[in-house]
Length: 122
Image (cartoon, rainbow, N blue to C red; front, side, top):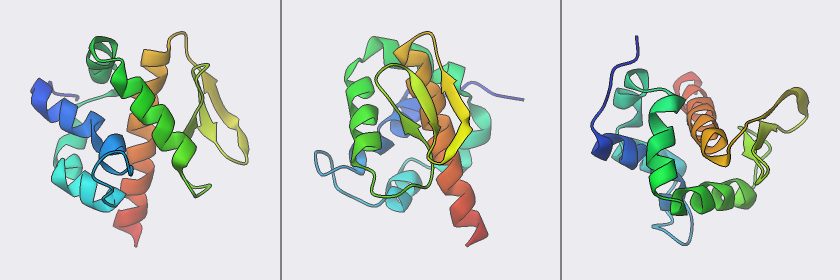
């Protein structure tokens, strides 16, 4: 069951991408996720909970597109400005969303969950 979180908690999650870039704090993804308490929050929200916040702050779109473009790994997910998300080398994972806001929200959840699972299995 997905529970509603405070907007401030959801914004912490949405800022992870920027925090890891050189345009932000330049910290590791692991550190950014820890600072946002991603592990503690994850089961309390879904992608749809993020859409309204992304619609209200279009800068988040640019930040997550930049995060995806700046990645230096084929792991995790990618997002394109046409609303497509997917995983490199896995064409069956490709999904195109009707709006970039929905695509960003889904990308954030899938990308962060991918790396959280990697961390838990390490």
